[in-house]
Image 1 (spheres, rainbow, N blue to C red):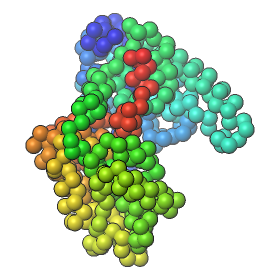
Image 2 (image 1 turned 180 degrees about the vertical axis):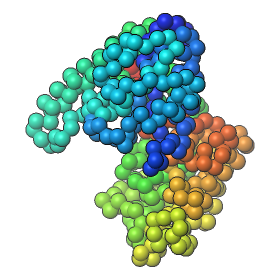
Image 3 (image 1 turned 60 degrees about the vertical axis):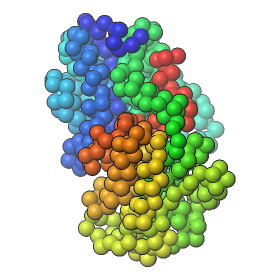
Length: 415
């Protein structure tokens, strides 16, 4: 079933969205890309005369209620974006009455799904090494199914429009689909677009292909880095992981972020790139600061010779030039993760240089795909969202799809 073919009039639709939006310390949304991305699907259901039940996660509350991650904080923003009042269910698993009372054209937002451990389906408070873990896992899977069944009971049909969590076999992204037949479950518009964007990169790689991987940790990106090695011509590794690579090669990194247990891995990645003929671009210089703040004193130093008491905060001018060179000549570009602490205005130059080079290449006919919350926030901060080919709402999901993995959230609908 497709969203365009389904008749929503008089029906209740439960829609899984990804409203895991960034909030400031006062609970205000700092980037509403994900909310705007889901609007075509949500508005279509309302315009057809359907009633709308919206469900999402926020943050990592690890199966416990935490007001810091309450979706009540975004209710008004969702209402404003939809142009319709939004009711709120303070407990996603006890919303039977609220769902039953919902009339056509009305909207109900459920509280954070991850306040229940059943959403992710992982046993809480028990170590994987514990002999009782396997039994706990089995019991949790049964509980997850019950949780999904409860959510499914609220509606007549299910729409998955949360590409950001499509790589997880969670209750609301995959298990719930088992409770709807093929004619009553479908992908939303955003999901359809995301699946198409991945296809554009995978089935039509125009070379050179440059991938830019940023972020603080090598460990969270290792699978993706290793998979991209077989696909890309240029691989830029930037952000906090720069300093793990610098230290691995005997450099001095001051107080910079570093994964000391991943130094061998960093050397292995360098060796792999060499063996596969991939041009690996690492930071040669950086903007170092004497404090982790926007107002810190700064100096440009070699990325492998940072003075004690100083930490790398952004890519330096020479590094920016090397990045731009690897990007501007590319015909296919993938960007995930910033080059520095872009949240601080004084440390945005590295990420901005990447964005400008991508925009330039795109204007010359390259296909550019930007994915992952921070990269999206970057491109929006610089006002350059309209100068790239496609902005994905999914970080991990996008990268797993590019690795060629089957996404449970897509498979649950498409089979």
